[in-house]
Length: 122
Image (tube, rainbow, N blue to C red):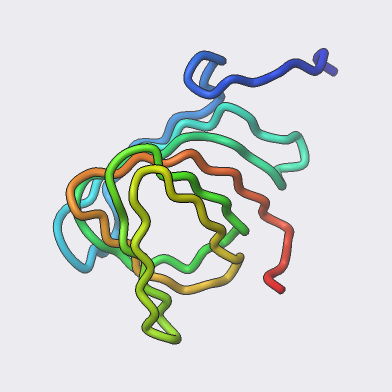
């Protein structure tokens, strides 16, 4: 077991980097990167940064996720209600596990994320 230590986003080593185009985009050609800086050994909790180019896609959130928009802006539409939320740099929000939404990145967006896989929506 490794010794516990503080993880600093952007300067601690990246544990995992994923770069991919969004599958079946609704608009544009969104390309995203995710850099995980912390992954709990249970697989239940991770912290990282994410960025994405312009476009929109539907997403059924597999995890409860806290987001802090660092740069750019996003519109998130709740598919069941049609409610549209706009989040600009400096905004923070939580997306419940299992919520079906459409993300729309207008030009470019970057966020800090904290995700927990095994927490149910309330």
